[in-house]
Image (cartoon, rainbow, N blue to C red; front, side, top):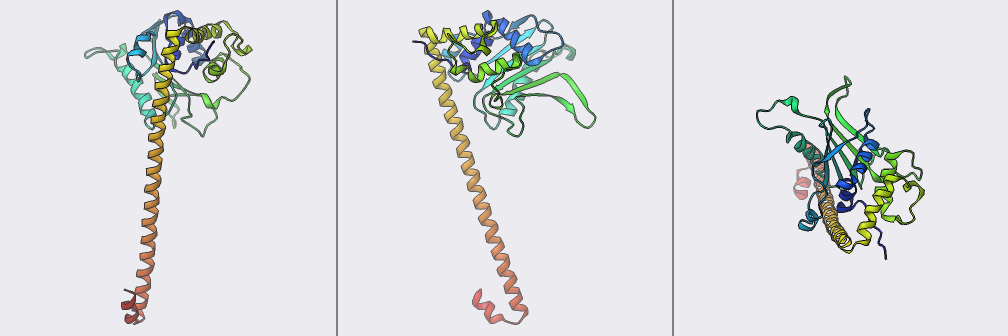
Length: 281
């Protein structure tokens, strides 16, 4: 019996985009998302897929790191649950890669661009409709870009609601969003391309191979536990914030009532009604 496999579970995600045998898929994915002027043709994986990494540490942070022929660095990460510090983490991981390129005494001109792509299973920006949100260091007033060395791309999976795939980027989005429901033996037409069939072969390996499926189940369980913890912490935070607001509202109402009482007492005193004031006080 074949099991359906979710391609956003970290070990599967990295096997699809971060393994040596699937380097062509990583190149295809990067060209599809980034649409560079000159297509990426060669890539070197800096941290290739190794199942021992997942067995040894159930909470390992999984990303794909690679370098192209021009020395440009790429980082791709899947994030299933957002946490309050996600924006800081995105910047931190980008800066770690950028900083690691040189050592003390090296010239800054050795630094090469770092492009980060984050695939988000939850929306970081609910108030926009776009699925793909690219970011750069940009001066809005004068329309100036400080540097091309930093580029961060967010792919908000929930924002993609179309049943029609118009390009290769949307095909990848479809795979990561809907892949968990796909029958790899009879995939929908949108996934009947050479690249998507190759990606689904990876899903098939996790489905049919007992060791791979056990690894997948363990990672899925770890992910669910982590997600439950994060959602629980977020719920607790919201409850505490609600409690704080309610107490603050109660305090303001008491202050308003006290201010009204003080005003009334002052008016009574001004009218010589000290006996009434004494009774109220």
